[in-house]
Amino acid sequence: MNPTDAWYTDAWYTAADKPERATFGPVHVLCASGRGEPGGAEYGVSVSALYAVAGAPDGLDPAAVDRARETARPSGPAVDRVQRVVLTEGQCVQMTHHGHYADEPASLALLDAYMAEQRLVRAGPHHEIYLSDVRETDPAKMRTILRQPVRLA
Image (cartoon, rainbow, N blue to C red; front, side, top):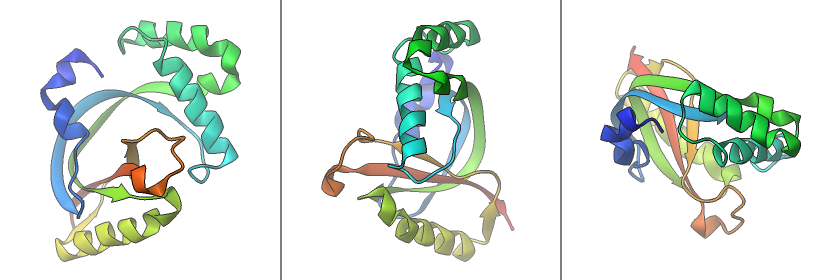
């Protein structure tokens, strides 16, 4: 996270257990692109690359991320999927999902119902923030923020 984004670090990693609205300004993050089920093979490759790059950069300025990607290159070619991006989401709906990734559709349905009730529509891709180690296998310990940028319908 960029030091200039520190003013809302706590809010970025916090969400209620039921759907709620939240607003976020720009934040610098590392993300790994890819497709697949959380816990699947493609997901594992992307997360491993993300951890390898995130563990090497000294800050998130573009040069540091490029150096970190080169440092992590021995871990595999997936490091090229790790990018520094700026998320400017504005208004969102979010909630903390407790449990296994396979059970997320029930929480996503709650977000959809809340959006319909509030007359909101999607305004960008949904994303997830893993609050627990992504290798965690005990569903009782798994927590994920589900966040969807929205706008008025």
